[in-house]
Amino acid sequence: MGLLDRWRKSTPGGGTSRTGPPGRRNRRRARRTEPVVNEASLREVLREDPNDATAFTTLAEVVRTRAALAREEDADGTPDPDEVRRAADNAEWALAEEMAQSPQAWRPLLVLGRLSLADDRDAALRRLGIAAERDGSGTGLAAALGILREAGMNDEALSLGVGHWRPREHDLEAGRHLVAAAIDAGRLSEARRHLKALGMHPDSARVDSLRAELERQIARAAR
Image (tube, rainbow, N blue to C red):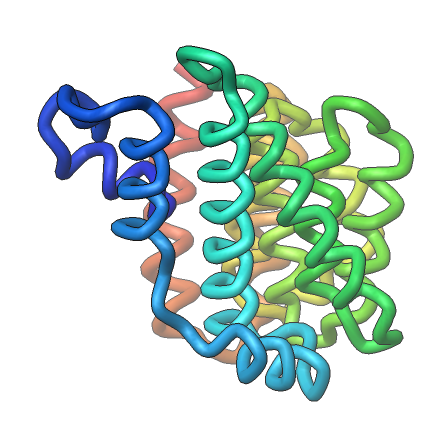
């Protein structure tokens, strides 16, 4: 839940005051929700490491909230929620595009991929693939697979995972997403193959726990 959503949830009537003219209400709302963060410091952190999860998430929330508030202030009457969301998405896109200029960046590419899935599927898949290639830990691959699964694109998730997954080295979450994508796609024999490969990971305790969970999912899907 973003800053704007949290403010609305905590304010009676969905966050809109019932007193005062609209312009004054909007200015009051902006003052109440403008996040108090050192934006310059966050940008400096991201210039050093564009994949810093805390800095990127915090700054993305700041720019999204600011853009959403600005769009609401500009609206003539009740703002269109889709336009507010698009304004927030555009602000996050601009931030991700800026940070993606680094050849080491993969987290910003995940954002660009997620935001472009609906409008340009091929470009989105390329961005997610590059993100997976750039992150040797497998965290980027796991996130990319999660984005595709959330969009209902399980076949695309399987293609991406098969092309990049290294079971011995990558975060176990990448393997979990790959097995789950195969289950959701109804490709149970493939799910079993990926589950077997997951056993190559050196963290045997976590593998055992994850295997038990995924085996139950496969069994349910096979009924």
